[in-house]
Amino acid sequence: MQSAADGARPRRLAVVGVQTGFSPAGTDGQYNYQQRRAALRQTWFPASQRALDRFEADSSIVIRFVIGHSDNAAMEADIMKEERLYGGFWRLPLQEGYSGLTAKTLMFLTAAARRYNARYIVKVDDDVYLRVARLPPAVQQWTQDGAEYVGCMKTGDIVTSPEWRWFEPQHQMLGSKSYFTHAWGSIYVVSGAVAEDLASRRPGSLRQFTNEDVTLGSWMLAMNITFRDERRLCENDCTATSIAVYDMPKCAGLCNPAEQLVRLHTSEACQAPPLDPATNTLPELPPIFQFSKG
Image (cartoon, rainbow, N blue to C red; front, top):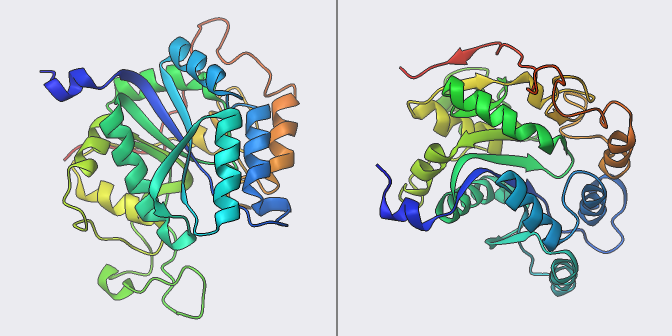
């Protein structure tokens, strides 16, 4: 039964939140987020608010850059100028920073669930080439499979020494040398219903680990939902099956995103029709595993 709250929220096939950040003056190369956003607008991210609105009307897919705030006045002014020029930002009420990625992700999922009655919510980093025209058939397949947590599943060693990056202060609680199964953090998908469940939790009631993708995976593990290992979300080039392209495992996303996004977009492989012309569907890879509800 549809609730009054559901009726007040517009229905959408998917909400895509592109996680981005602030670039201090003089930043160049891989960690210049402004350059990444410019490259995205040249490729798969609609380049203006009008284009975003038109894409949403045509596809029922919402796409936005997701970013918090900075205590640096110049960086704040740069984002506000960029938003006036292009639109397409969701500003979250938190200070940007690597240590706050888990809070940012939860805040994004909560905001998306409260604004939209979406079938799926996609979290994607701004150094990933998303073949966004392939999302509608993928959503249809995930819906048919009953998938509620979708991504390239992995485990990974638990870092127990504070001298190393990714140190996990709660490692003794985990009782193992490896983390539990969770989706690679560059891109993953949760159902709208799962996001609504997360949004309903009491603030501070969900345990957080060092890594955002591990933390989200722990929440999913605690919920009675269906996992799908979706290898089409972590291919290294545009293929007949790829939905998301990046340099896993060499880099967390594309190694040189501003350059590679444009190169991919103009390549013959990435310009190929988004669907199989014979069947008008997206080829489906059988999941390496799909864990259903218990």
